[in-house]
Length: 330
Ligand code: SF4
Ligand code: SF4
Image 1 (cartoon, helix red, strand yellow):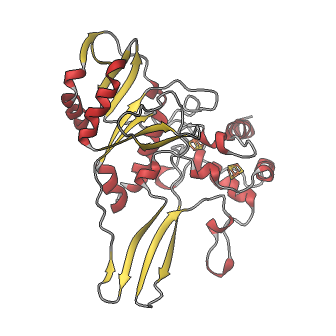
Image 2 (cartoon, rainbow, N blue to C red):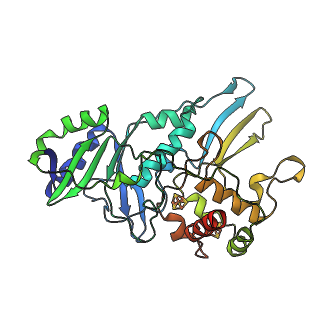
Image 3 (tube, rainbow, N blue to C red):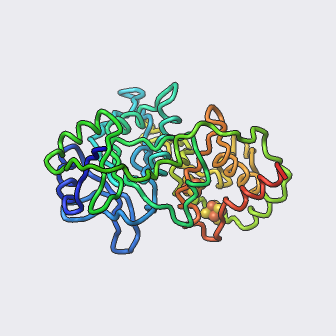
């Protein structure tokens, strides 16, 4: 079988060609040793060895804070006009691609979010294969989410096998054909294999609110929200309104919110749907492992391991999931 091959020594040439299609972003290790998705300026080589960036790529599609409506007494209400220049995201691992697939299901569903939709259609996804480490759980959570990309690079001897996953990918292949070689060989085992499975048999019942595990874990949780901020599928946001000091203008803003914050489920009058940390912890667990709404049964955990890296008290949902499975099936 013939594969498209790009040699290691042509990686910089590949990146240079990709810049013709948009602003190129990739995992870059900073002076502080932290790997972040950021602008890849010429001469900088992306860090393709790091398994996870500090923040996932959701920051490009769902901005941490943005205006969704503005008002002035002269112009009335105005929706923001989103001008999204073409963005090329290079070096996405399958978990992050599946995370984007989850966000697509949320924000491009029946009523697409215009800001997300504009950015998403301007974004080209270029995946790179990886080998899971002990913090990853993509192998344990077989998921119907798909790790879709426009191009996908898999490591082979001396370079990468390159596969297209979309018409945009075909166009890119055409644009880099001078540095591609056609080689005889098999595609390597694909690290996207953990995704794209049919919805598996999952317990559909709600987990018992009285299980002692909720309190046990809540006692260790600081409620800092770091696990949610770094999660590629956590998309909760708050909507806030601010009036101008002139009394003639106002903006409505949405900003990332966090289900582990006490304020997350607070409503007018100071009431709260989830007053206790144990309730909030259970809520996060349910969303990650069971999901809800129209996506019920599709885990929103894509196994990237970021929450395990950042949690200051070392909380890992995996042993909790195993124990809860025992409670229900044992
Ligand atoms: S719950 Fe943790 S491991 Fe799962 S996708 Fe979110 S950050 Fe990654
Ligand atoms: S990072 Fe850890 S301590 Fe902070 S909210 Fe998440 S589980 Fe709790």
